[in-house]
Length: 311
Ligand SMILES: [Zn+2]
Image (cartoon, rainbow, N blue to C red; front, side, top):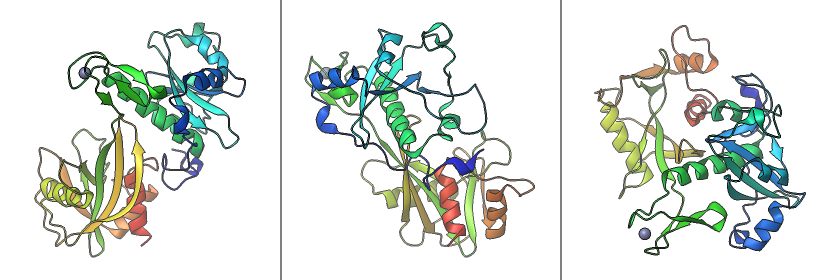
């Protein structure tokens, strides 16, 4: 994977647009902005972004920004307002219906709808931030079309940042699901685990959703004990976060010390887990380990292991 392309330390966590939230309720301004020549429109189909190049191509793959003509691609497209660029250009995202056929459209040949993770490797920091927000919002709309209070179909408000139930009046806001992802360390070793569904040789940091009624640090300690039988020694320390729109996670990267190397793996959650020495982890990160490999640059787990290796 082209690791050198990402400009921020943690992909998706770099500087984004000015979200200009005060514009979201101004329908007249939004319509005028969307139809202006300054408009920049990110296009997606089934949460896959339109990027330059061809399917599966390696190397940098810039996002294709269309202008107001994007509205002509489909009457059924859903529109989001993402914010404004530093120069004040309004930025929107459109999701085309799954039936949309690029090859017979007015923009045939311009690019392709590409796997999000692959495409994201070639995006600038700002473009990736916009694409992550758009994907997370489109996924939320796709899964939350009905009121969770009364079951009635809800309508989109605030330029895509809210849904409202006209029957019971409930307001619904986009989900963000916090996930504690943590590297347990003891002495000169770190703990990585494997799920049975993963590619052979692939290991990563343990992770789990934060549950109601607990802090991030408590979630990390609980998951570590539940999945690996490892007791945390002191609270987890926060390293960095990463929005992860598959569909709505916020990855919260942590490091914590373990009481001992004793393991008791819960095989309903993990296939296995084991301690790796610093040398083993470094080789996995560098791609030189004969058997095992670590998470790719795009994953926050990569950066957690890197931070530990670098002290
Ligand atoms: Zn309702």
